[in-house]
Image 1 (tube, helix red, strand yellow):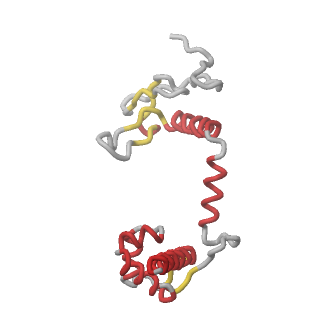
Image 2: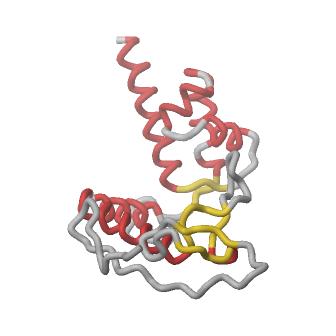
Image 3: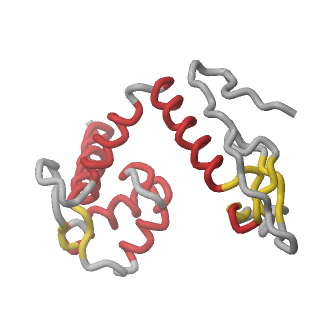
Length: 177
């Protein structure tokens, strides 16, 4: 069976020619790789990654390590072409949330005692679940704050707490008038 030097798939990128692999020594467990380099050639099981979860956990994957790496690189390249602004937006957001990012408006930590009164007031007014939603954190985070698990919290969260407290106080004041 003759294998062409290169074939085209969905994209404009060409798949490299199939590599001639050495024969698997007798007595070595092997499997056929269906990837772009091997094209159903037998490879030793040591050349395959293993499935990590699911009903096939512990079994070798369909492609050998080299073909799998090639397919992953190709997929990432195509993803970047389909979503050009995604990576820039993602990295910008990640760097903003990074505590070491010096230009972040709310950088550092604040003692929880400074904003604990606001958290307790919000929990009294709305209940812990709705208070967490108004602050923009998970219920579990709010619960840990109230149990004094943490001595300090992020300044971003402190700013959100005080903003939610002010909004709730303003709502209460407009209801009275």
